Image (tube, rainbow, N blue to C red; front, side, top):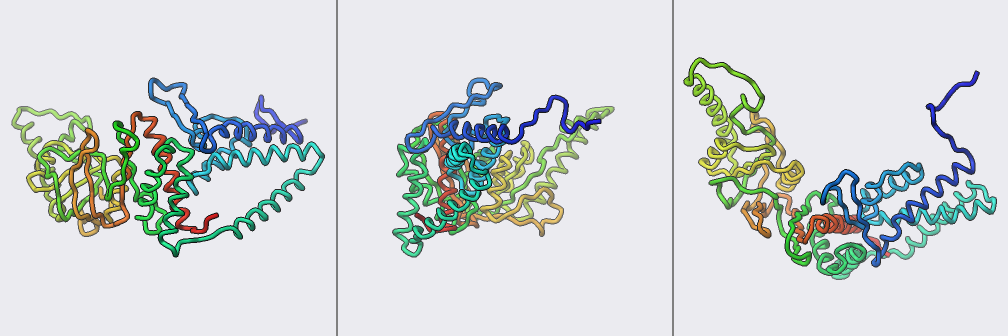
Length: 403
């Protein structure tokens, strides 16, 4: 009696068929993205089957972005996609190159297999070639980190090379300077969270610039101070509403309107006590992940505290990082809450939008790249290009030898 190992309808490939299936799948992935490689590489338009209008539309020549947007069934093709993702996470650039190189190696391996050379012998040969290539790179590598002027020029050349195949190629000299200046502010750190990228539609790509400090894509509340010097910042994720009945969907029966007024008064006094507890910490800037309703907003304004509501989670995490604070959700033990600090907080205008700039943050490495452009797709691809460039530069600073 035979035992069934696989699910009903499952197929199995062995020996030569399995090997050729994997090789063909990997080569197909390489052929898919190789047209995007190099200074003359072409962009690809990816449209989601469920997208409407601009939704689900991606215009890019970034290998990792293309591959993770395409569903694949072939096992070897999925391995190449994972290699591309790791390359993107570890280095930031070269995602297309690793796929094309791997596909070409397998193409050559296919020819060797046709000559009846054993696969393990081919693998050993590739390992010897890898070791030889590594030795050649080690001999050719040089470092100019001790020569400040030459080191900066090397970084600019690396940034220009990275940007040459991107959508920013026409302005690669300008953006190379932006990326190098941003990475040098990190003072050797590879934590790119201190570099904020803000995208604002409108204007030309060449209108983009690097700004000192951290820019939060939010507006200051009504009647709030527009400028705070010597800011002491509390970054929080806490509810600042008074109408708990409405929020939680509860039902309350009252016999007259006086009882309803008493209920509302109790809620308002409870919120007043919460605001007073926050203000007692000596802060002058309050940034909340959640909404701040009109009543607590007015209380903050009366106390001279700048209140900023509904900041995106990524934004508050970065803000806490660069200002040296922590995200608080409870204020029962204020002595345990770490406040952030910076020299000033002010409202600025980028294009037609108002934003908030935190200057002179405790982590002096903080900076913001402000990207301008005509369309959302253009800005998204520009952001990917900047990310690739600063990622490569940060890795170069960590390992300064270049070829």
